[in-house]
Image 1: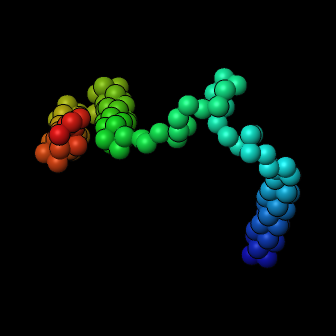
Image 2: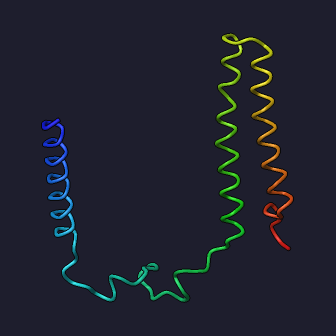
Image 3: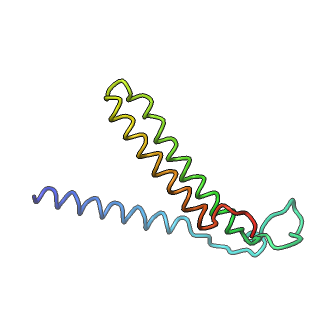
Length: 117
C-alpha cells in the first residue's frame, strides 16, 4: 500500500513539474499587436476575421456525426452472423436500427433537420 502511495505522489510531482516548466517556457514575452491580428496575405483584413458561426449548420453536423458513428457500429453486425444464431442476430440488429430510426424521427419532429425556417 505504501509503494502505491509513493508511486502516486511521485507521478503527481513529476507531472506538476513538467506542466509548470511547459507553461513557463510557452509564455510569449513580447506581445505585438500585429502578430496577434489575423493575417490575410499581407494586407489588413477587410472585415471581421471572426465571422458568426451558423448554429444550425453546427447542429446538423453533430447529428450527422452521431448517426455516422452509429452506422459504423452497425458494420460489425455482418461479421458476427456466423458466431450467433439468426434470431439473436436479427433481434440485435432490429433493436439497433429501431433506436436509430427513433432518434432520426425525434430530430425530424423537433425540426433539427430543417435548414431554413
